[in-house]
Image 1 (cartoon, helix red, strand yellow):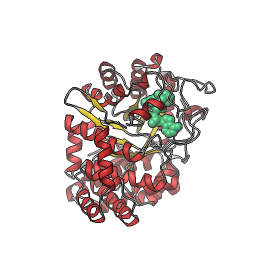
Image 2 (cartoon, helix red, strand yellow):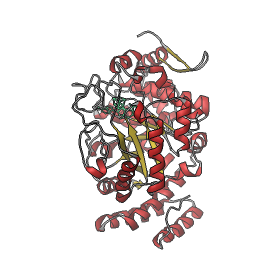
Image 3 (cartoon, protein in one colour):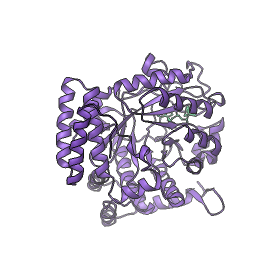
Image 4 (tube, helix red, strand yellow):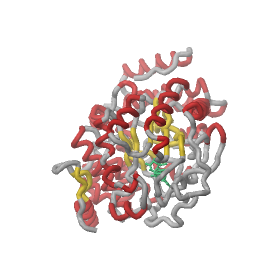
Length: 462
Ligand code: SAM
Ligand code: SF4
């Protein structure tokens, strides 16, 4: 594995393979005392150096690992409060010209029924999600020139025009700057795309043909997205393709690159673990255990405290609950991974989901774990995004907004969607959450706004 540099221009390296490998070698040599000091630095909630993150990713000792998990949970509470954001993915199209060996949508999979929702059908699916109480949706697509940016942008616009969705995020294949600008102009919130693996030889092996074969075009997409006007971008490794320590440290390096260049860290880091897929890989090449996944979440939380850590329904219910205690901040819920899945039921999915609970069931379990389910979309809509969001979060200024807005959205959910038992459970969560608000002026304003929601007002926030 020689050193390979990914250049933006002569002076701008995104991920330096040799540096990542050397840092991991150094990290593996960190002593007990070193780890204790690193945890102390990390627990300030200001982020860690790549060296420190490498040492944390290399932890094997049980006691040190428990200390890491505990610190990460504390940092999460301090930075974002008790809120856990809930959202749903909406698969637009599973047409794909790429050959990703792990994915059920890859072009060679002849057994998959291909479907691209029309914008009208996307609206029907989004309405089905809205009827469940969701306020944010993540549009997901395969890669096919027939369903490129104009198609995706029309779906975004149709959903805004015809549903009550407050923010539409997009996970779509990398595109050029002009296309990303078009997507942003349609109103997309976060632009998300995963590098899958930052390890070039592995990347080339698992992406044998199609546009996705181009590692450099993919790794540079976040720079293009931000240049095109996206303030918030979402990155992540597909865990299981290569050594997770390498890919997680490279993900952190990627986020640091964005921070250095634009003043904003990645808005979210997703941690998908490879799942069985129709005609996909028979075996996971580098399996990641549940405990390793917890460690990964905790390291992301300490290394990039401002980033949301997103856990999908690829993971089972029990593990998802545990991950909330070690730094995860966002959960998808009730997900279908096939186009039209909400309005028309399941057909062939991109990968099989592990947590098939409905939104009320997920809400109930989030509450049982002592957290506040949140359907908040405020920051994207009031411009608390990009560098401003990173700065405020690290300065400890977001917690009060997050907690208060989570309670407001929960109140709306109670009024409009929740049924008997859950209404009561969520009612207690609001009372407890209100009690935790320290700032008396926010507390008073929150009480007034909760009352306004009871009287019929909607979409109010801090
Ligand atoms: N087609 C676009 C792309 O590849 O960038 C975006 C959508 S793709 C459907 C979303 C993500 O699903 C991929 O980036 C990959 O990380 C993940 N994925 C693909 N196959 C998977 C599998 N078998 N198990 C878990 N996640 C998978
Ligand atoms: Fe296509 Fe994306 Fe699946 Fe690759 S991961 S086959 S690009 S849908």
